[in-house]
Length: 381
Ligand code: NAP
Ligand code: G4F
Image (tube, rainbow, N blue to C red):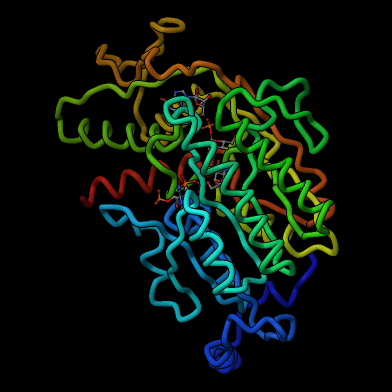
């Protein structure tokens, strides 16, 4: 693994003096930017799953000063970063990706060494409902970031969160860095456009700009509209109702045949950070190399919950019931998508070889972790 220095836990004494140094510097002064003892990292999307995990990763493994961006919402949603807010090396700043002034101002004010862009309209299904907003957030905003970096902070290393959705209608299994982009959704198309822009800026202006291909990654901070969390949360709720002898509504899902390569989100953070700290910029696939269907995710979660079930029906009539015939999970075609990515499985051998990237959690551990977390959360509510 490269950049070992960045990987160690910071010495608190050294750290406080470095913090004092950073406070005494005007961030507008770029003359000694490379001499600065502490690197400044902008992380967008810190209220979401990945941004918040990246904040935790950087706090634990580096000395960096972290600027986490948030946008104004009517109701605060800081649950994923509440624990980090008291950290002196973590600051919240306002940035909305749909406002190019706010992107430019944030970059000119902070003069970051790294800009890690995790913010996005990240829900594939939603991208058919609001395609323009998806394009503006996931493609146009990336262009604004690249332009601001080029003009105001060309030394800044840029990461954009790319997706296996860009591979879309896949033509080989597993997919590696050579697989063509064949997106199937407005979301996938926007991420593919961002990929081209990132490459064009890297090649035209010699920027360190990368867009990794991250396959699905999940965990206890996953939004509840994504299928894994919808299942872990839905089945935990049903289990608690069963324990209290209460009635419950069945969990309703769409395409159970869809197959994904699911990894624990925490495992991806070291891979992203390594991608940012190579001698030259290169895009890598991060994935587990294992593929499971949505149906298998349901079955493993039911097993974690110790719920015995009988499976019957096919396609739109498929359902999982208790031995007494009470429906637990059923298909609802309302959750089918206008176009589906049927299967995704990543080949991460390049990242393993060149970045030394390794994972801690496999599929079963991930499912167990998610189910147990939701069960405890609901039980203690
Ligand atoms: P997430 O949990 O949905 O988080 C998205 C973040 O983006 C939230 O913090 C959200 O803020 C912020 N955001 C949305 N619109 C914004 C705007 N206009 N201005 C500023 N911030 C905005 O997503 P995630 O799972 O962490 O994914 C992180 C990134 O990786 C995304 O770019 C996603 O497309 C990509 N990705 C994810 C996966 C995966 O499996 N998780 C796989 C491949 C790629 P609010 O809280 O205010 O809404
Ligand atoms: O959990 P999903 O919504 O994730 P999806 O579409 O794969 O996208 C996620 O992974 C991408 C990486 O490949 C990211 F770029 C993206 O930001 C996001 O994090 O759906 C997974 C599969 C789909 O095939 C969907 O049709 O599950 C199927 N599914 C079946 N029933 C369902 C449902 N998906 C959702 N959300 N809800 C259902 O009820």
